[in-house]
Length: 61
Image 1: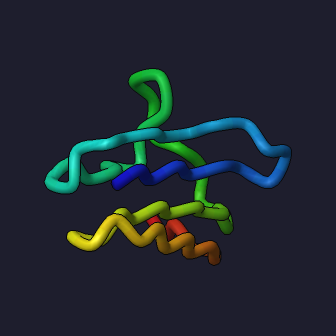
Image 2 (image 1 turned 180 degrees about the vertical axis):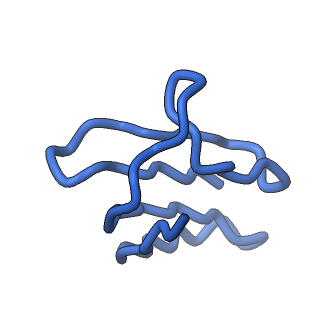
């Protein structure tokens, strides 16, 4: 599993391969601004099939 969250300019705001790790809305120790962010999620199933998901999330403070 790999989760990457990007800002509107394509800068990586968060990246993790730990399925239990959550993005807390922080970036470099500072709260990220309220905005729409893109995500890319890559999941490898037990049968080794790879699934890719993309979308957007809205950060509201």
